[in-house]
Length: 109
Image (cartoon, rainbow, N blue to C red; front, side, top):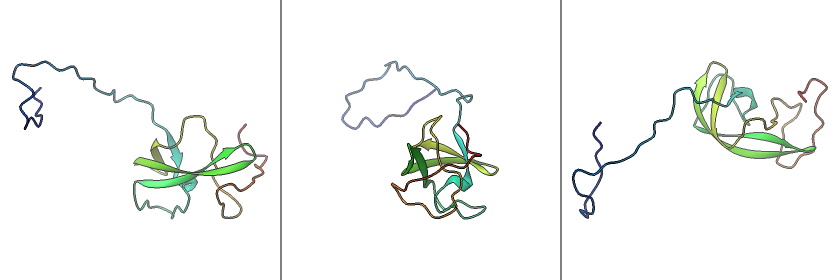
């Protein structure tokens, strides 16, 4: 493998070794339904940024997320949401940061 590094100040000499780590293609991905994105328009994402409403106690917190690849009706979340965090999939009314919520009986534990 050859690596090209900007060395305009000539601090690096030839023949040096470098240690690199490659990320496995099998890294688990965090996928959420596109409908969980605040302001989602059916069938299309306008950018790689979005936001989701995360459930914190009996309230919601709007959180910005960085989005990755689209997989059917789901989208990969690269940053901003952790695995296992509860988020709002759909609401009966538009939500605002800090709104109090009452999860439906169908909500997962």
